[in-house]
Length: 224
Image 1 (cartoon, rainbow, N blue to C red):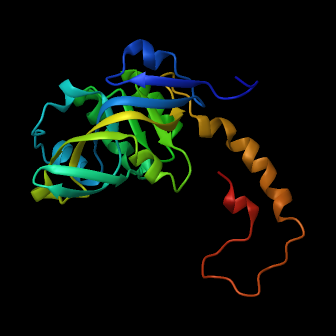
Image 2: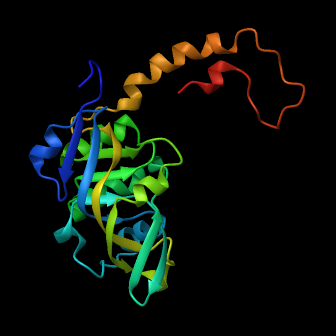
């Protein structure tokens, strides 16, 4: 491995405590095994409205993916997924204490992670990690890692995109460890480095002739 290159882990779901303990913010992970999707519809239906899942998801896996799979039903009860892209994780921070407590989730996969406070107050308590997909346009690559769609539930109640999908994964990745079980956030660690480089990028730029309403040209507004 090259010096300063991120460590890579190929892990089997359900994840073991020792798997999670070895992960550090900034590592890369590839996941194999069962996982289920949960986002707006599932969180509301399951956690807020109190509807128990139609399958024993807690007994199946401790990995949950914040995603709406681009999938279709190709035959009665048989589904195929062309793309698997995560949605913004910060939107779901309020659901994390209940999700991790009641369903034993140890790994949440989303996009761009959550705040360091959420990791320190909730993820540390439950020995859990938050992984993020890497960049845009990789949905098809992530989709190819789906070995099988085990089942799709709550379609009538939530619609196909918001339904609870149970997936069997084969080396899904790369996924970045954004929040580790020690409460560290990778993005929080590198934001200062990024911010320090923004101001020089703006130097010498002329104001645009046309600009959209609300568009900013000041580096201090762009800070992470």
